Image (tube, rainbow, N blue to C red; front, side, top):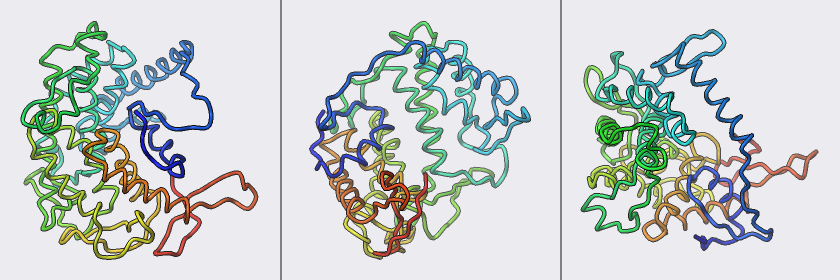
Length: 357
C-alpha cells in the first residue's frame, strides 16, 4: 500500500511505522532493499527472550514485574500478570511451545473484574496498551477469525486477514480452540471493566479506574491526549472482532474531541495542547510536543489510517498537519552536532529545547 502523504511528512512517518505491525510502502529516493533473513541473529534474539522469560517464570510468575538483580517481584500493574500478557505474541512468533502454554493457562485464570488489593488505581492507558493490546494481538496471531456482523457488514475493509498461527503454521504449539477463544473473551471482560472510565460528563475517559470494592473512576477533572488518544486502535479492533459496537463508540466519542479541538487554541495547525477537560472535552492548554503525555496520540493517528485508509482518512490529515508543523517549527540541532535533529516542546508559539524518549 502506498500512502498518499506529502514527502515533508515522511521523516516522522517512518519513525511511527516502525511500531505499526503492518507493511507500509513509503516513497523514497533510495532503492528499497528487501530484508534478508539472519538466522544466527534470530537465534540469539530468541535465546535472550528465553533467558528473560525463564528468570521471570522461576522467580516471579505470575506476578507483574520481575526484579532480576534481587530475584524479587512487584505487582505494579493490578497483579494480573502483565509480563505474561504483554509477551504472549512474541512467544508465539518465536515458536516457543514451552513458553506459550503456561501463558495461555494463566490468561484463562485472570479475573479482570476486580483487583486483589482494595482501592487499587488501575491505569487506563497502561492497562490498555499492555493487557488489552496483548490479548488482542495474541488472539490476532492465533486465528484467522472472521469479523462478526454487524461490524463486518459495516466495515468490509477488515476481511479475513489474520495470521492463523496457532491453528495453522504454529498448530504444533498446541493451543486449543477454547484457549484461543478465551483470549477474546478475556479482552471483552477487561474492556467491560475499564469502560467505567468513560462515564464522565463529556465521554473523555478518566485516566484511573477502581474495581475493588466498587467499580468507579477517580473523578479527575482532566486527562492528557496520550492517555485519551492511545485507546482507539484496541477498542475499535475489539468491536470489529466481536461485532459489539459499544467499545468503538465509546472511544470514537472521546477521540472526536482531539480531532476537532476546542478551548485553548492549537499552537500550530495539528499541534494541540496536552490536557483536555473531562467535563466538556475542551483543551485546557496550548503546551505540548512529542514527549510523554502527548506522543502516542499522534502515533495512533497514523496507525488508524494504516488500519483502514478509507474510514480513517481524517486521522491521516491530522497527522500530516501535525508533522508538517513539527518540521516547520520544532526541529532543533545541538550547536556542536548540526547533523543531529531533536524535536522541541512548545508552550503556545514559544518553543523550548527539550525532548523526551
